[in-house]
Image 1 (tube, rainbow, N blue to C red):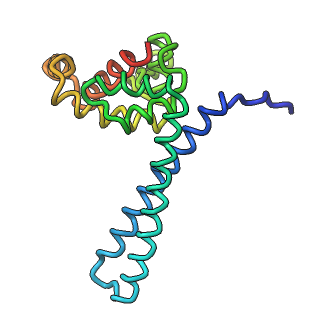
Image 2 (cartoon, rainbow, N blue to C red):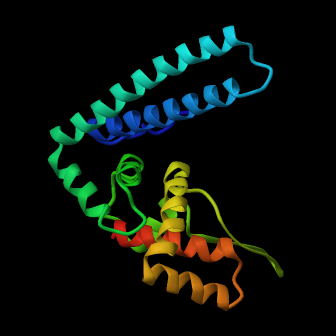
Length: 192
């Protein structure tokens, strides 16, 4: 077997993706330790150890955030893309960085490709006369997670996105289907 070589993209794209992944992991670890510390059966000695671990993780997180800032100072074109992305309601700086980290092709995709990459394109499951409905699948999980939160905010603060969501729910579409449509619309506006 001779598998084809995988192209991970430009070195800077890989660096941004790794920095963003590390930021996410550290944030999750900090929250996990804080949750464990708050359990009622943790002794004061163990709680002190958790404090030390949390402090160390927060220092590492600060360093990662500093490196992300330095990365964008070094790559001004990506910094401009972040500034452009945050003009959309629902997209904050962290979300914009996630978009660029997990979709470096942003701005060069067709509408169809943007839907597939973000995992918001409906996939119809049908075999013969059996119709099993349409569901979203595939795509880049981190991108879809960031889009979910951005869509929740956009529905609340962007009249155009609220109208799209409201129109679909009034047609009888379930909440998740309408929300996925908003997610797809948000990302397609960014990607194309």
